[in-house]
Amino acid sequence: MAGGRVYPSNNDTTDGVPNNLSVLLQNQRLHPLFIPGSSPSPSFIGTRSMVSFEDSLKTNRPKRSIFKMFDEQENGYDEYLEECFHQPEKKRRLTVDQIQFLEKSFEVDNKLEPERKIQLAKDLGLQPRQVAIWFQNRRARWKTKQLEKDYDTLLAMYNSLKADYDDLLKEKDKLKEEVLQLTDKLQTKENERRNSEFSDVKPLLLQEPSQKPIVVSMAACKQEDIDSDNIPQYYSDEFHSSLLEAADSSYPFEPDQSDLSQDEEDSLHPPASLSNFGFPVEDHPFWSWTY
DNA sequence: TTGTGTTTTATTGCCTCC
DNA sequence: GGAGGCAATAAAACACAA
Image (cartoon, rainbow, N blue to C red; front, side, top):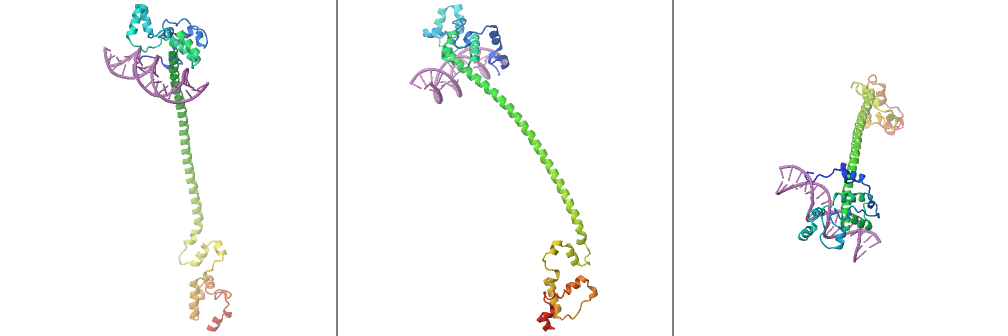
C-alpha cells in the first residue's frame, strides 16, 4: 500500500475486527443483538449513527451523518437542517461502534434474515438497506480473503508437489545412468567372452597357405555342417571337370601317389561305389565302351 | 495543498428461488 | 413477479507523501 489510511493489518485483526475493537468487545458484555431475535440495545439509537433509522422511516428529510450529528450538538439542529437541505446527500462511513457491532453480528452469522436486519438497523440507527449492504460488502471482503487463503494453500501444495516431482526426476536420471553403466559393463563382458571363443578358432584360420586348404576348410566347418547332407568336396563341379578331363585323356599321366596325402587320394579316387557319380565303373556302358 | 492509492459505502444489472 | 444475493463498479472518504 503506497499511500492511504493506515488500516490494521491481518495480524492485528480477529476475522476483520481490529484488535482494539476486539479488546473493546472483550471488555464489554456482548450485546444480545448478536444473537438473532434478541432485544435491542439503547446505546446506539440515534446518538452516533450515520442515518437515523426512525427518521428515515418517518420523514423524507436527508439522512444525517455522524459528523453532522456531532456538529449538531454544538451548533444546533436548525443550522444542520438548513445545511442538509442545501447540500446533496453524501456518502458517509459508519462509526467504529457501529462497525464493531456489525462485525460481531457477522461472526455469529454472515447471512442476514429480515428480522435480524430490522433489529440491527433499529439498534444501530441505520436503514435496513444499509445493514444489508454492509453485510453484502462484508461477505465480498470475506470471500476475497478466503480466496487469498485458498490461493496460498494451493501454492504451498503446488510447491511441495513440485519439489517431490523434481526429486523423483533426479532419482530417475540417476537410475537411468546406473542402467547405462551396467549395460556397458555387460556388453564389455560379452565381447570378452566372444573374443576368447574366437581365439580358439583363430590359429586354424591363420595357418600358412602351404598347408592343405581343404583341411582348414573342413576344420573350420561346424560339426553340424559335416553331419548334414551337404555334398562332399569331391562332388563339386570343379572336381567333375577334372575327372572328365582325365577320362578324355584316358589318364595318360598317373599322379605321383607319393605327393598326395591320403585325403587327396580319396578325392581323386573316390571309393568304387561312389566313382562316376555313384555308378560302379564296371556297370557303366560308357566306361566299358570307351575302354 | 494536492495528487494518489486504498478502503468503504452504495448502485446497477443479472440471476435464482419461492 | 418480487425479494434477496452476488459481481462489477462508481463514488466518496480517508491517509499520506511530496
